[in-house]
Image 1 (cartoon, helix red, strand yellow):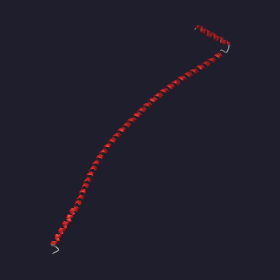
Image 2: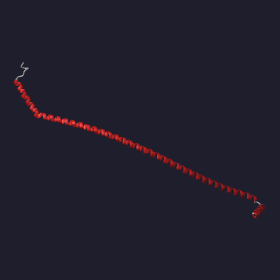
Image 3: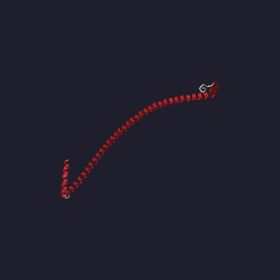
Image 4: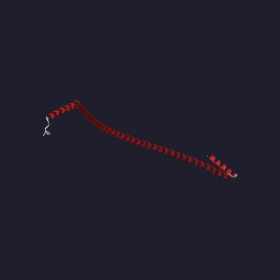
Amino acid sequence: MELVKPAFGLIFWMIVSFSIILFILKKFAWPVILKALDERETSITEALNSAQRAKEEMANLKSDNEKLLLEARNQRDIILKEAREAKDAIINDAKSKATEEADRLRRIAREDIQNEKMAAITELKNQVATLSIQIAEKVIRQQLASDDKQKALVADLLKDFKMN
């Protein structure tokens, strides 16, 4: 039974040694352990705060990015609308210029045709007059080949002249 019941001396020395160990731990180990625990708690708290700030910043950046993306889309739509309007204006301007140029060319072509027509008519009249003179000359030469015919023609002309 002695093994189950400890002796008084054993208990005394156990209490003394436990007290000494407890004193040494309290004097040297506990402050270091508590300081390390406080530092660890502080670093964990700071890490959690940093993570929360980072999460908030990410949310802000995400909303800013969405705003920028929306603004960029609006600007793109405005630019595309202006480009379409400019394209339509250029096309309409080109069509009107082409129509004006076609009308001008038609007018010039009509004037050229009229001028060519008048030149052709004048040339034809000149050729007819030349041919008429040549025919009249040949007819007169044949009629005036003899002296009798010449005298008769002069007499007829004098009669016509006197009547006028």
